[in-house]
Amino acid sequence: MTWKPIGVVVMLAVLGDGAVQRADAQADPFFPPDVFVQRRARLAALARNAPIIVPGAYRIRDREPRQDPSFWYLTGIQSPYAVLVIAPGPTGIREALFLPEPYQFAGAQYPQDDDRFRHAAWNRPVQRLSPGPEVQRRTGIAESYPIDELLRHLSALVGDADTVLFTRDMSTLYVPSGLTAAHTYRQQLERAILERLPNISVADVTPLIDRLRLVKDPYEIAALRRAAEISVTGLVEAMRATRPGLRDLAIAGHMEWVWKREGAPRASFGPIVSSGPASISLYTLRSEAYDFDDRVMQDGDLLFVDYGAAEYQMYASDICRTFPVSGRFSPEQRRYYEIVLEAQDSALAVVQPGIMMTDVIRAAARVFRQHGLERFEDIGTMRPQRVWGIMPSPTYWLAHGGGLTDYSGARGTGVRDLGHHIGLDALDSRDYSRPLEPGMVFTVEPKLYIPDRNIAIMIEDVIVVTNDGYENLSAGAPRTVEAIERVMAGR
Image (cartoon, rainbow, N blue to C red; front, top):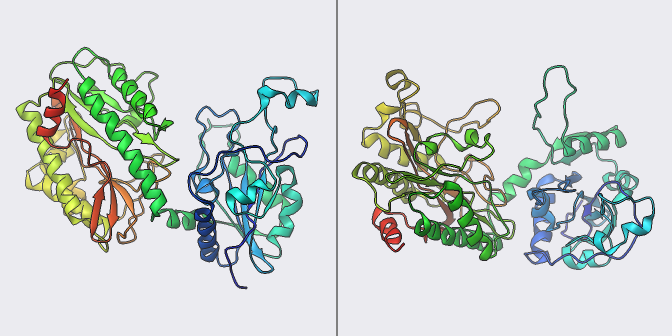
């Protein structure tokens, strides 16, 4: 069969009631419809005629409203509880969208026995796209249906295929012993599809989508650049606002105010603003506390700021700077800061198309070894309470021939290295299996933890690979000791 990037994406949403009406008004996608049309065509070509089902996020009464990144990457659609289906058709690719109707799922806090209440003004959704002619103009998708018709259309869309590709959710939700295993929304949807199509098997399409997402197009790079610029603005103003006696939380709030003033609706992830000894605890552990940015900054502290950074047009940023609360580094703080900066500079000097990410990591690790820091990460000698955290680890990457690593917080596996790919998620992936190529965007973030001196230092920037090297999208954030002290002197 010949594959062509033509018209019918099926976004299938599920369940609900409400009369069929014309599409409600969703704001135009951030990118032109052709961008999403081309992405779906590339995915269909990678899938080699297999039907594809990509559900959106649940998003009903969601405290952190954000569409599923893979779903948005292929559609540009914000509407809740939706599913995308791409399938072979008689003359090429068949795409279709199944979407919620204008007032479906609305008014959860009001009685709905009388359907007139569902259509009251206070139940009108914001930026929802519903089935109708507007769908094709906004998405390039010719067919759209109410979400209640998902199961009725599914068999015809899949046809006689024996395998369907689905964005499988392989996560395992913890439940205490003796309780029934919990399932996520996508896991439940997958089970429902298998019940409807008992003679097919399901394979995971996520690796194919991740492969496409790894290399950014010009629209994505422009959004990432703007997200970084907004983040830099907030970070510089945070440096100017920092002084002894303020709480860490005040600086986190100040940056968020700046980002929203500049047009970023949210942060890419939660606050990591830690001073003095608080900065030694990894953020994944500190986030267990309700108010983990509650410390009052003291003269002589370093402030560690890795606050998710601004998000813009769905695209993330992730920048970190470490700077002195007093405005001036102590000689000891300066010494270790400049070692971390040297490690970052050495890593950046390696970045160019064709280079493996592991070579970039080793360049940074080599600096830590050259400064004699490797002995401090020997837990046998240093003991658990004093051992340094040195990332990337020279012991692993140089002495032990470190290569690709498996990351899992649940399993406790993986070695911290130098960064991660970034895009629609702050942590898009750590796929280092391919050589660097133009359009790849990732962070470079060497770090150093010295517990008995209350020193935690990380310098992180967002880097895009270009045809002849790289561009630092967050270069506007002061990096050198002199530049940081100059900004802070203007307080």
